[in-house]
Structures are given as C-alpha cells and as structure tokens.
Image 1: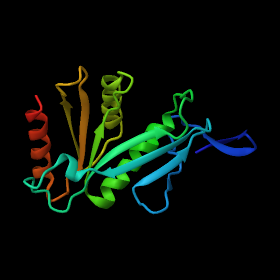
Image 2 (image 1 turned 45 degrees about the horizontal axis):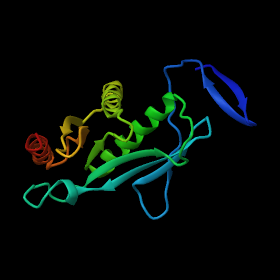
Image 3 (image 1 turned 180 degrees about the vertical axis):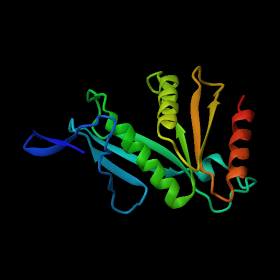
Length: 183
C-alpha cells in the first residue's frame, strides 16, 4: 500500500492512498475504570466515551440475565460549546470501542439518543447507519422508543448485545418487554 506523509502541527500523519481505509483514533483508558476512554481528533477536539453500568436501572430482578452488565453508552466532547466537525474517524473509533467492550465482556450496550436539542431521531438514524456499515459479527441490535407521558419527545433506544452471551435471549426479551410496556 502506498503511503503519503503530511505534516500537521509538526506531527507526521500517514495519509493512506485508499480513502476507504479509515483508522480509528487511539482510545486512552481512564484511570480507575476499564469502561471509560478519551480520544483526541485531528481537529484537536477531545471526547470521552463511557460505558456506565445501568443494569439495575433498566432491568429488574425478574429478568434472568445472569451476571450480564447492561452498559449505557455515553459519548460527548469534553469541552462544551465547541463547533463540532464532521470526522469519519469518530464513527470508526466508536465502533471499535463498542466491539471491544462486547467482545471482552459479552455484555450488552444500551444506546439512548441524546434529546436535549430535539435531534434524537437523526441520531438514531445515524447510529443505525453506522451499525450497518460496520459488519458486526456475533452482535445483535434491537431498536426501540421510550415514550414519557410527561414529555412531548420520545427517547430512541438501541440495545446491542453479543449473541454469544448465554443470556442473550432473556436480555432481548426483557428489552422488548420494556419497549412494549412503555407504549
């Protein structure tokens, strides 16, 4: 593969001759936890990626999910109020992060689209597009919508689970029940 070198802020960056080869950013594990990472983009924007255990919040004791942890995925820029830039490497980084978490833990990830700016439906579509793009072997994805009677806006939710998890069917059933009972 032919490579070209480019200098950006006195750093050498490899430019691949094939633009379809997107390299994820380096994830830096945060002290004290193995499910929280940061990364810095080429545009010098720093993000945090967290997987927060939310098993007890979403699944009650009647759900037979064994020792599976339901990890709520969170992804935000560290600095507030910055202008975000479209960056294909971010999607690659997030997909890599999720695959690693699911492969190592065989747990489930719950993605709840941020609705603070009314763009939750667009986020849900983008997340689905990313999921389809990154052929995820042994990973299942289910989508749902939570309706809060006190709020005019729905919450778009996706469950991503390692299909090799021995409790996968029970987790999917519990998620489906939550989505159905919320209607």
